[in-house]
Length: 244
Image (cartoon, rainbow, N blue to C red):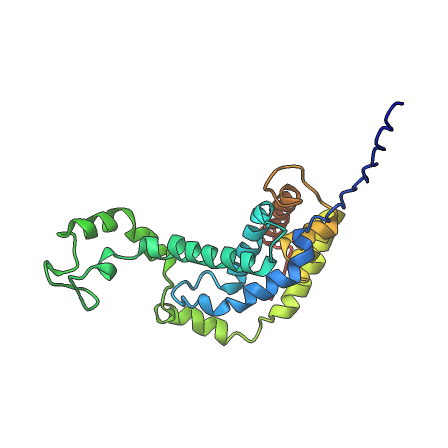
């Protein structure tokens, strides 16, 4: 008699559940909240040419570019906070720290302009000489100019009764709508009237990109902004826009 062959136990087919890939757009509100929490970190009043709104735009774009590095099995907020903190440090370094005098970190410095070695902070010091040659111009360009140096211009602006910013903006919008193509006008409205983020504007326009690490519609938005600026300059140069 042949022994009975053991029955083969049928293996259950396991179907892998597809995990929904999280997108940047899904967390736009969370990203904005985390960026807003770091407003106190940007306390450099000396950088008058870049405020926290500009910094926020830079942070959003940087998070978007780094999105492919996010491990979606982990919590999103700690990752966002790390990106924001590092980027703020980089911005401070690139726009301020890289241009300041070496004396600000030197133990021999005395007061604002004094020096224990050379009496004054001057080119006799090789570190100061190198800064003066390569970075002093950049430092001067990035520091705000005191308003007291331009009292006449400030007085004229403050006491001009003929200039209405809101009314002038409305005139500009009307002229720009006539001058721009329909898709350019849409982008103009999103960016300069509704004050939307470029990424949001690109999404509303339905723009996409197949390029790695590039935001959707970055080329279209860039080209449209170039056209918008050209049209605005043309209107102003040809005296077609009376804003007063």
